[in-house]
Length: 116
View (cartoon, rainbow, N blue to C red):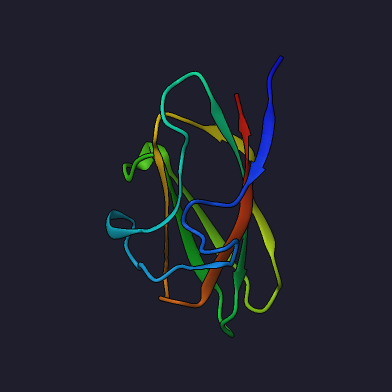
């Protein structure tokens, strides 16, 4: 039977929100590094908030920075937390990165359920 353990995002300090400083996905801000190997999975839940007064584009790199691994979302200003990843899975030490159209105005929070 599978075991689920809730944990913070590895890019977070003490469970705090992660400010997206990067403006290009190639040098993206690390949000989470998945569990190593292929026998376990991380189920990822991410929320984003845009604290600026303008719409900001958020790009998430899901284990890669090529087009097939990217998700792009326009975040409206001052809307609170918006669910941007709802329980997607990742493993094998792949890294989730983020970049925003404007540095340090998008914050990412969330958690992972480690499934082993």
